[in-house]
Length: 84
Image 1 (tube, rainbow, N blue to C red):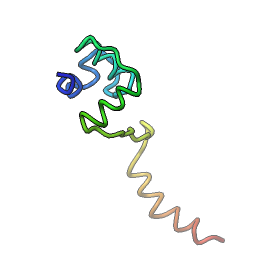
Image 2: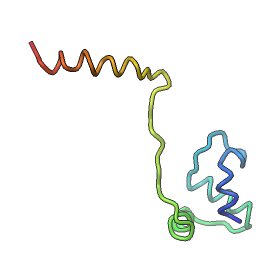
Image 3: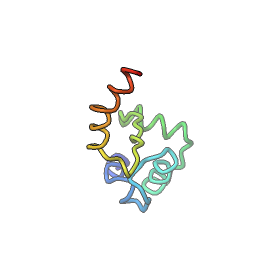
Image 4: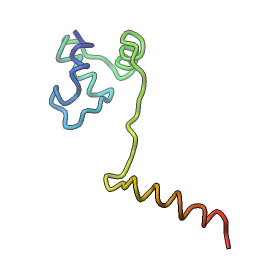
């Protein structure tokens, strides 16, 4: 029951971003089962019983331009590395 609820994603439970935190998981567990868990108990539930692991989202700028990065690596970095 808890696994199925969590697999729906955080947005399905009214959270703004589809990112799970211990507090959010705890809130979903409480709604689904009526049991209030501490942060450490939520962690044990996720890592022990459900077999999930800690994963962090990559922090990347929204404005990131992959083609400009590739150009910089190909042209500017060798010039800088070579030195004067």
